[in-house]
Image (cartoon, rainbow, N blue to C red; front, side, top):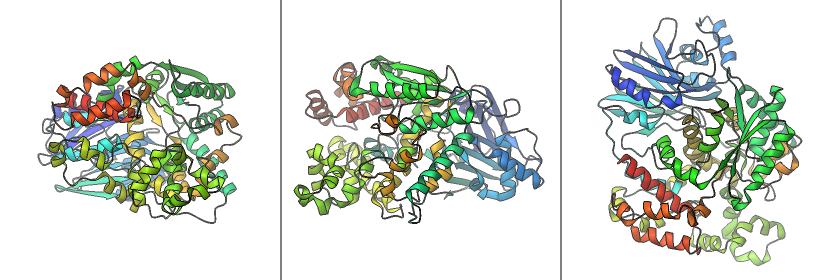
Length: 617
């Protein structure tokens, strides 16, 4: 919906305008700036709901409570009815932003629990001289902040904070250490010293110069043995349908991403049934058919034909990737080597609509990634490793990824507990980084351990179910810090709002009650979700292997992008920071180019770090 920014303390109108201007792409339709002796609030608006009277900041009846807000509150009409009955007076016709100030009046800080939506909120309480900032449950919308020169600053993106004169641009080396494993900077850190981000479901309260952070919502995995498979499938279908219905409210045209997989296809199918009109759908295809990616195009077109959508495709080449590198880096403000294909699909979407629904979140709720498929085998590996030759056909099926890739077996043999084995699946392990990073970098981040970080997340799951433990890890790390990060930044770079129906809190909480055996069954990923949508989308789509909008970087690095890589990762350019050992980079490049190992993801990770460093320092 927009971008927000602001700070406590004496007004600095020019600084507020600079912060707001830095995120114009998030809201090109309107700007709002307001200041008082102790606080300044700014926003950029992408007009989607309540086009005529939806400007911000918004205040309550006496002006004592004001709010700026990024996102959408899907149950705002229901909440408004309840608040009007309680005596609250509204100025707008159906602004979801105005609901927030009255809801806070009624329920205080706990008003967040009443919201069904995606949001980043900054609320000023004049009576208490209190600033509250909060992020939605799943972390769909970002919110960064920091205390500088005795005042709290906040913004939707880092670039907005960097526009304030009190913020000095300094790298956070400890956060950067984890980038080489996760492909992104994990919350609550950012790549810049002094700038942090709220975790999903977290709020921070700044009152009388004291900052207090609180986790207001956490997804708890607690399997309910009373739920049978049929009941679970029916409940998932009903919740998903209602979630899609709620997310189809807009005063502007909207569409949907369509990869040809079960997640996005289910959303498109429900949109077509609920809306009763042609849905605009958008897909990414490749100029060259690497990894049989043409199958995505075939299945996406099949779904588009079945539901008679107004279908559009973006044909991507390696040159598009090269030409967009600076724009992608600028969208993140941080090193990021995860999926960036959303940038190109959303560029196409922006030519047609302002809002698009997506299938994001289903993988992390129902199980799809390699780490999910290996959860049970990893859990039982110590018991099974000496019995591989005696395993049943079913057990061999569960271990198939190991049997196809002997190096997995060697890696697991060298590892100890479940945490170590899970950590070994990330890009660079702690041991790898001891070789990759220079003595200077290792000294700057002494004591950091990505494995320990993962272990802390695993221990917070509250369940003994191996798959749900793995899902909890990705729900807390991968989903908000990488998946939703690229969805938000790369869509808002084109002024497009993305709404993920699978991340309705009701659906998330229900999925957390299901055992892992319903989610991956006999090696079948997302089993219970596929049963829930059977009959809604073609069987061929339900049973196909997962692909998604993934760039064929590995192949391009062997061909069209090789010269660029060798230029960016040259010893001369690495010496600009002295944080990475050239000798180790050369080993990685030589192994990839000789095809003795597939190090495409590692090379891309290093290259994006180098480009980021040169851009910001």
